[in-house]
Length: 388
Image (cartoon, rainbow, N blue to C red; front, side):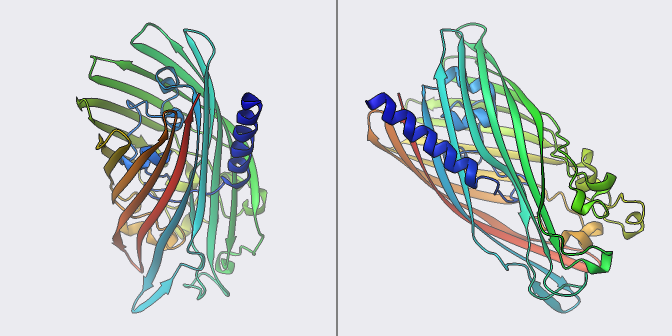
């Protein structure tokens, strides 16, 4: 009876995540600071830190080192974005609150093999200007949403080292409005799907130190036909590759420190990395002009009492948007650079935990000609973890 109930809870939780999860919004460019509430509370550091099932999203090899169980979570995300042209400021917060769900599940098959699945939003961007900032008539902006469903398996090479892989099914959708100056109508949402992979290795270097490395492939989902004159190559909106390396160190019996370095390859995706040069628009090759981004993540988790742990993190990545490309940066102002995060985790029972988190991205402005763009962010989240 309990087994059937547990399976029902897991199925409903993951189903809810699938139904809601297309939404995640820019913190490190288009990407979140991390995947999973516990991971985000620690600045996103997860490549070498096998915390819970959501760690599999960053490094699938983590499945070998976490207990069987599931995690479900929800984040309330509030970005504040604006653009400035001359002395006029345009408010891009037509929609100001976004819900970002997540879910993960993992089960050991035998002494060597573990399997699981994670469902999460991996990136996106939204702007909605009630006053058009010069791109046409009516309200203007874009909405880009991205969801991952990632079946995962890991294999233990020995007691200390494991490799893993995830097959990433990607669903994304895109909408643009108020761009009549580019000859683009308000065509509503268009969506497509695609497949990619994440591979990783994780191991215990010593009894106190672990390390991990993962690589997520670039994905070219199906073309967004409604925007084949706006997006390069007749409607392509690819998902960039990312490489992540990390360590986790058990500094004391109660204190864990984790750190990651991540490289996100935005320049390899034409829609994101091509220059935001109107001269390229007639040839269908104009992009947002973003550079590749290197992100540094560090976090700490301290077991303050037998039932309560506290977490803190810092995340930094230089804005991928530079001054010469702010024209389209008005639509996708992913310019925040510095993030701090906090978390509290409480044991509800020997096998269940509740985690609450807060993240703040400090305001950053990129001043260009003729536009300047600015953003800051806040997010609160909650997650429930259950071990079998």
